[in-house]
Amino acid sequence: MIDDLGFFAKSSELTCEEIGDGNLNHVFRVVDTITKTSFILKQALPYARTSKDMVLDANRCKIEAMTLVEQSKYTPEMVPKVYNYDDNLCAMVMEDLTGHIVLRTAMLKQKVYPKLAKDAAKYFANSLIRTSDIVLESKQKKGEVVRFINKDLCDLTEKLVLTSPTYNDPRKRVEKHLIDFERDEILNNEEVIAAFAKLKHNFMTNAQALLHGDPHTGSIFISENSTKFFDTEFGFYGPMGFDVGLFLGNLLMNAIYQKVKGFDRYYEWVKNMIEEFVDKFTLQFNSVWDTYAVEHYAKNSEAFKKQYLSKVLEDTAGYCACEM
Image (cartoon, rainbow, N blue to C red; front, side):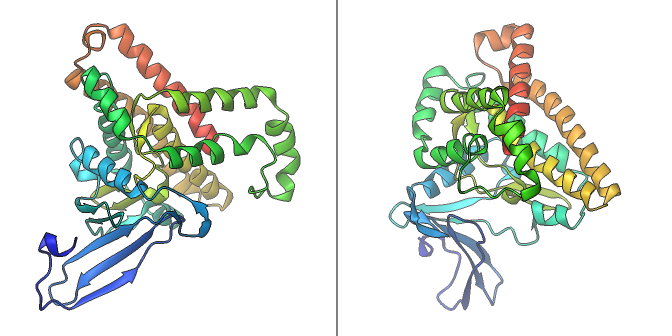
């Protein structure tokens, strides 16, 4: 699959190192030491990288490649380029984002990125609305829902994010000083449990748009002038608010960390950036809708657009809480 791309000459001197630190896949950087040309090779095996007991469909790498290719139609500057995918190897070759840093790492070092809120708002508004029934013709959209069926990784999300927090799951690690709080405010709180149930059901049944599926701060590369969303192996058609809520939940958890650790100035930046993101996402949502909507009511009813956005933001708040 590498020879087909024409990246390297026969005289090239190549190095390869494993750089992945995630739970599921193997990730390698291949570099020509002479020309400095490089790319990333990512492979999914039929089990998790951290445990062969966790059986998973290796097709997840294909889903990741498909999702990146689809999202590149709408925000090409915000996803890595996919050069090739091999069905037999369950592997893809993609752009090397050397020069970027993982957002989670950057935020733990109190790095400020003035463009983050604007870039993220543009990415989510475009990738979500433009893969929904608002823009896609109805038959095409239904075909896309089938094409992006992602049973195993949706099952992981349904269990770990949307069910595990509400019962005594032995896989959870709860600090001793939080055990009573967890029991009283979550495990024995029927209102909270009902909210989780509603959000889980929505996640399972609302094929609203093509999601990234897991847009936490470890799935975003960033530099001074660039924001890149990657690791889209959880991609599938689901509720828009899930993507936006997961992103916000991770930002809020970082804000809490900064406050607890006494990084007050950075805490203020994160808090203000979250508010800026919500405002800019709302503006981008309306702009993308107005520019690309083709569905009859989407084009002709301002009240429908307001109701639709209101529900997306309601879902966003709920999934943000689930993630936290």
